[in-house]
Length: 142
Image (tube, rainbow, N blue to C red; front, side):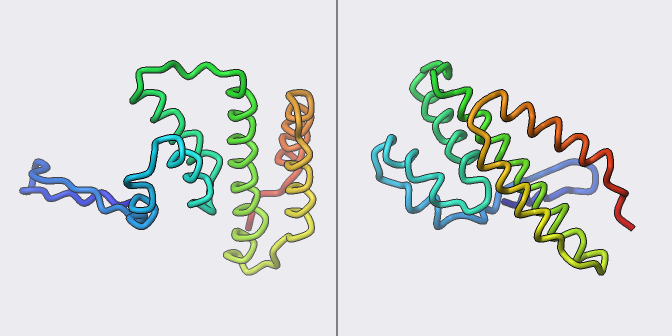
């Protein structure tokens, strides 16, 4: 998504948003709300869980419904794990290449496995502590 702003030198005189995902939006148009929300996570390869949670929350807000559900804790954990996985991808695969180093695929895959093994709050806390310890040991990129 891009925000395009026109200025007259000092103030903004116009603004528009250029959506980078018009195809995704067009796929949802005309579908029953529940089916559209269920489809959203499958439309996005990046952060599909977060996109799905956002769609569900938006639908609830549009209906004037609260957000508290029994599944909310699990959904929040899954979104957080997804975000951690995306950050690890950048840290271990993309950044090394940008710095002229080899991607750290083995480490990435080991962390990905750990992320998929998290099934409850205790496992999430253990993973979080291990990630923090790993980050504190890691030398900064050069």
